[in-house]
Length: 299
Image 1 (tube, rainbow, N blue to C red):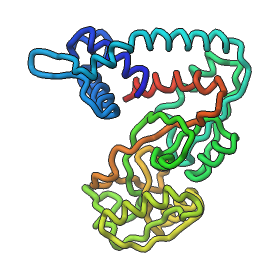
Image 2: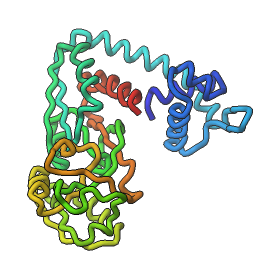
Image 3: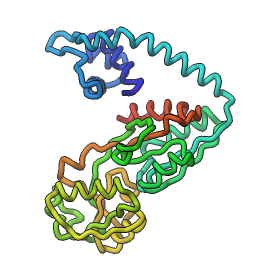
Image 4: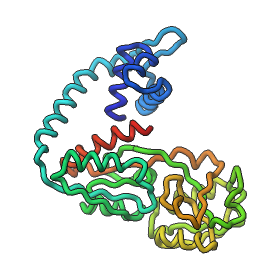
């Protein structure tokens, strides 16, 4: 649950109208409704009783609202204290990105604002494989990582924030017979050779694709490789296909085609930013404040 969602909740309570609250927040009513629904889903309880004419708080919503204003005031005071304390802070923030993730739509405004506001902090950004990112985070070689959320499910001592959604897709050589087929299904791929990372490169990535293939009811030939560059190489040469995402840098490659897959299991996965709870680098909070604001803006 994000700070902005809590602010949205307070606005709805005070207006007792999604339409009026959306106007006061300079956002659309459907977008505001989605944010409140996401809060309710995360809490596992309903916050509002909705009917055609009135909007009322549930007992759970009342309990949440009774403590939120004081909490938000304290939060703002803490953030202001942190900003003042770090105004002249000189340090380092090391960010690791998934090697195939296209960060160009979300991160440039965040990085620009961070460097403008905190010029004394040296920012480094590097790309690593799906398996390397959590390893380097735990080794203390990175402060923040941005990766597929499913790769962090069993990782302890992490704070995670979901910043984008992605759908899994299929990557073909541009001249492949299926490269322009509409409504592509797993059954269409039954006779294809899949190129994917092996267990050693990424246990989570390996398992995700294996589960996807299994749910699709097919048993194709699979060629295992060690790096995502190798996956791309095989597909570029026309010797196989690969599962990738609609947020991959590979979609800018003129030698391949990224196609949507008509399968519910591939939709709506998370791009996640994570850091260790035990990492007290103050630059993390400064960066994530900007990150969450931009993610909310683009949602």
